[in-house]
Length: 87
DNA sequence: TATCTGACGATAG
DNA sequence: CCTATCGCCAGAT
Image (cartoon, rainbow, N blue to C red; front, side, top):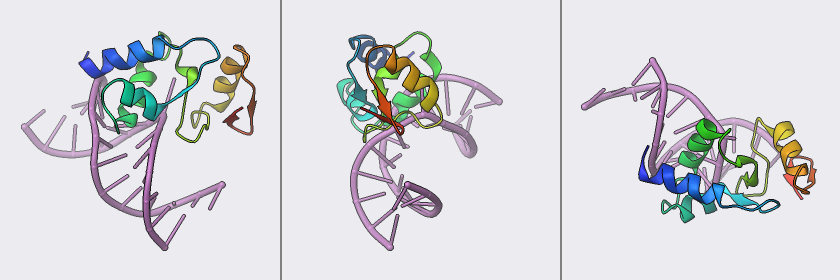
């Protein structure tokens, strides 16, 4: 468990229902601008322990390969999705 | 220690 | 909209 990992988890865990962040923002908030890929790596491992569905790609697109699950979880918090994009 | 693999980002074509 | 590149970082092998 590295410092970055802890911070990333903290940032994501601090999000409120209906709030949406991008991988880039999470990385920056965690103190590692440009480490968006690492964020994805981390969320992939802790997906069940963190509200990862509140994190989307930089252009607002739902997580590639998880659109259905992602859209479902977001809808649960009042966020509707359209054609793979968070609305 | 070296390499590979992603739930990524930005840019270029 | 798509692919190709390069830069980025953690964790697995």
